[in-house]
Structure formats: C-alpha cells, structure tokens
Amino acid sequence: MAITAQSIVHRVVDILQDTTSVRWPVSELVRYLNDGQREVVLYRPDATIKSATVACVAGAKQTLPTDGAKLIDVIRNSASAGTNKAVRMVAREVLDAQIPNWYGLTGELDVVHFTYDPRDPKTFFVYPPALTTTRVDITYSAFPTDVSEPAAGSTYDDVSGNLDLPDIYGNVVTDYILYRAYSKDSEYAGNAQRAQAHYGAFANALNIEVQGTTGVAPTK
Image (cartoon, rainbow, N blue to C red; front, side, top):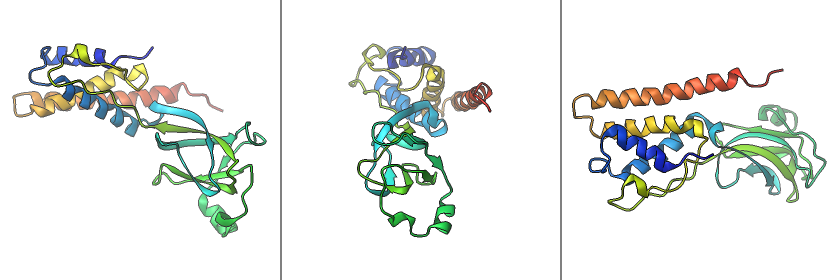
C-alpha cells in the first residue's frame, strides 16, 4: 500500500508545530519532499527499480527509457523477439582490444554481451550490435515522479498523490524535509543542530537499510 504524501506532510507540520502552515508553506514542504525522493534515489538507485523490455535501435549504442536514471542490469534477450538467451556484462576494454571494429559490425537479432560505464549512467552498448527488431529485458533505476505542489495558502489536507518510493522510505523522506525546513531557520537557536540531526538520521537510515538488504540477499 502506497504511503500518501499528505501523511508525510501532516507528520512534518506536527513536528514543526506549524499546523496552519504560516512559517513553512505547504507548497514549500512538498518541494522538499520531491527533493528528498530524488536524494534517496541518488544514494539508493534500487529504491525506484523497474524492469522493462527495451526496443533497441540499430547499432551498438543503446539508451534507457525516458524515465531512466541509471542502468542496473541487462538480463537477457527478450522472449518476445529472439532466443531468450542470457546477456552477460563484459569490460569494454576487452572488446576494444580483441575486436577493435566491433561497434560497426553487422547487427544481429540476439546480443551476447553488454558494456556499461557508470559515468554515463543512461547509456549502454551491446555486442554484437543490435537490429531494430532486437529486444532486451533490463532493470534500471527510474526518476521518482514529483508530487504536485498545492496552491498558495493550502494546508496539509490539500496535498494529494503518493510517495513514489516504497513505504519503508517514509521516515527517511520525513527526516529530509525536516532537515530542509530547519535549515531555512538556522539563524534561530538550536535549528542548525536540528537540521544536521535530521540529515544525519536520513543518511544513517539509508546506510542501515543497505546493510539490512544485503544481509538477507540471496547468496551463492
């Protein structure tokens, strides 16, 4: 069950003791919420993981769907347009050294390998080059969808939409919003420390979640 953006903002205004949204307008808190979602994905790309069958373009160079932030894996040739064979990652340097002209080879329906450079996270290359009929099944991290900002003068009751992250990140995003809210008033006594405490809780929760995920992940 998706956690609502309204419930997050309601929790925040209670903590800020600003339920009438005078000091921190609700539209501002929703902007912080959207920033927080993106910050989570920056550190945890798997928080918005998606699976998709991608229609390749002719050639070696391929790109993610329009909502793609980072490639996670290229799994196989799609059963809808090929032999369903697995695709394995290979270092680009290996292909470059052994088959220097591989980028320009004649395209084939099934690909065997893919290469990926995290410095160019929305692009990957396939070997042999693809045809326009080639389809591959991939997993990727998607950009989260923003929650719509309510009109000026709104209260938390006017916030609509859901958090575009799994429910377990509800408290994480709450801490991020509070970090940004207290940073706005950091000239007041104690608020700078409160801001840093909430950002520390945000970052610490993400790190603990990584440990929890890897601790129960399947192993060989």
